[in-house]
Image 1 (tube, helix red, strand yellow):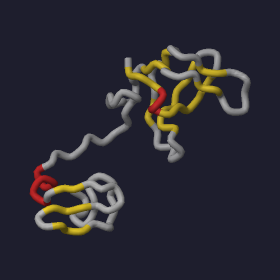
Image 2 (image 1 turned 90 degrees about the vertical axis):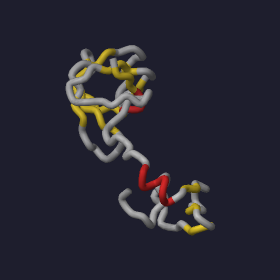
Image 3 (image 1 turned 120 degrees about the vertical axis):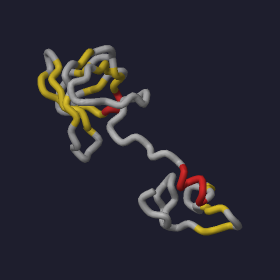
Length: 115
């Protein structure tokens, strides 16, 4: 655990002890100190819409029609995108790729499914 004085669910520092349980008033999560110490660490990385871990070079399929800002074109549902690159853009667009007929584009991982 990163910090013992934080909620493990929402990372809020405003926690309090109630008997032998810890309580977060912001998300109403309750936990025991012993359970948190034994809990496995969550996998880190970028995941698709269904929770599958993505890696650079994977092939994904678009699951929602995506309108391209500043253009009249769109990426249609079912478009297969090969050889993706994972990037940390900071604005939620964490996949860089090339799509035939459109060119280089950044996508959000929540709108793709790993093939």
